[in-house]
Image 1: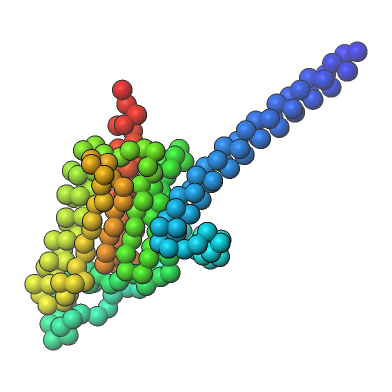
Image 2: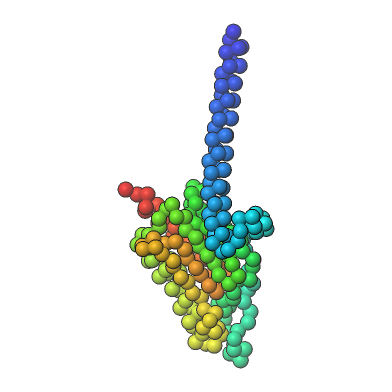
Length: 213
């Protein structure tokens, strides 16, 4: 009888582990489905038919998260040498569209970053209702990151190393105070890394403030 009791306890414990694993897998499936739904929405807005989405997404999502971008080596005015203290002039992104999810450290979805020819699109998670008034969006991301990159490119233009049309630029798409999308143009490989890190950190800090009472 004692042996049967021990076996029963072991089976109950095993059953509990299986149930916990199923619950965990269901949660992961829901998160992946939510991300897929957002990607589908992006593609449909760009004019693709639903039947084309699988074909488009397959090569994009199979690519590594780190996007290989060309490094800039050319200047618009070759007669003026580039000072060693300045960065290379930004270049347009030429990679095919790649989707990168931005999440908190706890794997909470924040946004989707995807690349399309000469632009980066950051689609914020609409369920979060990120407000432009929530710190540190303006004080850090806009004033410390975006503005800094623009100032550097203005210096490149002044030195004749960059044309105005190739300057770093951004556009914040809003509905009232809520941020829907950030569109960024003219980014080189080094700036891409900084932008990914800065945007993810900013959104995570905003989300933490939004959850606070």
